[in-house]
Image (cartoon, rainbow, N blue to C red; front, side):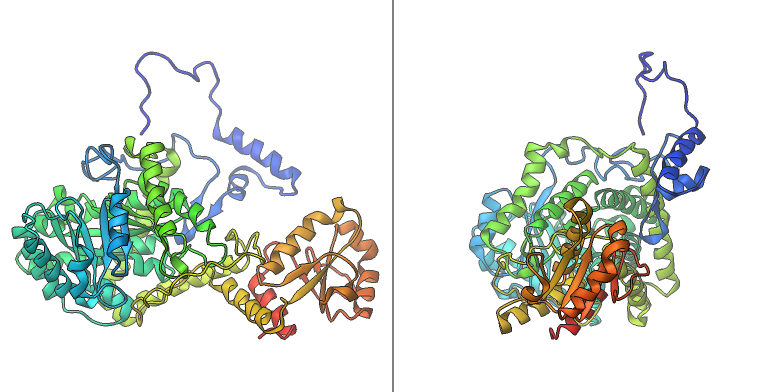
Length: 602
């Protein structure tokens, strides 16, 4: 927490203490001017923001907030970092993902800032026999290698160890992770995997390869299935505990078992939630190791990946902004390794430019912004400390729920975990459809005339288990319908925007309607008369005052000119002839889907 200087200087010493109630009264006064008559705590609550997992972000945090002492970096509960030096020496590990057997791409990344490799091997990735060829020319004693091989985890691991031996890499110089994750594979595919090979690999690494870990606790399947931050945390804890049971049952002690695990989490563009999630994850795992009798082994090794869920296919350039914020959050949250997915990740195999931007995102934050020079820069913030604590409690509750179901394997096989994740995603889907959670370039500020970004198709990822969701999927389906209509007819479906009165009266709602309908691939027409627009539907755009004067007559004129359906941009009211209303908070996906249906866009 913040420590005041011991020099007698109090910068706020000449100012009187202001009670919290006084601030609430001032807030109530401002809200009253906007039509909200609330007092005291209700005024503060009116400015609060609801998050998932029952959490709320309040407008003001003070020194009176209650949160446990976070400790020091490198010491339990490891909230502020798993190592005393943090990432101050050389920054976090810049880990690039490769799914294709492209040796030139691998070497190009390593020559330009990447410090470790994350290789997808087996189904949907590099063939196991090709592993040596892909790593030809890589200094394996310098560049850690992390595998992600699913059902082929054991043969892939054995092949990597063979390559180490063939290249003369000393066993104590090998670094990385063999990537066995039987529960993660089951979550992805629904296929049960024997955990005995993973346990045997762990025994081998513990005894002969001190720099290698055998297992990954991958929380991405639960994040990609629509899970919340707390559900991601709880699922990772339950998986980690399941692996501890397997490894200790195979003969390792708890300290050795903990040293064989690496945890993988998602970083989103919600920077504070990501920072708090990583801090909470370390605190929770420290608690698990403490209960298991190995408090000093609780320093969680974290590999953080920018969220695939947030990546969009339309206007993919905006993904660079999302990934930059997510990477900043991962670094500030104390991640040991960070993978920045290329901005074209959702479109197929990344090209050289996309890979360069991805690796340079970390490089700029480390080398130019010097983000890694400060350990836990968010620590001491009353907001971050409180959010960390609340998220830790929510994650622990979800972990306990999974344990009550019989553990991670039982929760997956019963379908209970999938139902929990689906319920969370359904609620989020509603927010996305209503644009309460806006997606720049997709649901907000779409650009229909953008030139599509085309990439070579990527291998199909493993499937059959938990679903993979994306934030843009509702709008992507609408845009795809519009694209097919364009290909078939030579033009997109159109809607006429009828602006009433001067620009000052109609600009705000005209812009709103234009953005809304473009999000569904419907081209707005603002020039000329309705008969010249090529549209079959129209939207009235103006102020409430002008609606009262002109809406009814304008609707009659539009329908006489052939308009089959007339919207009004604004809150629902009593306007004769108006068929529907579009307004902030309406279900945009439902409105746009119904509009395309009426226009005959299949």
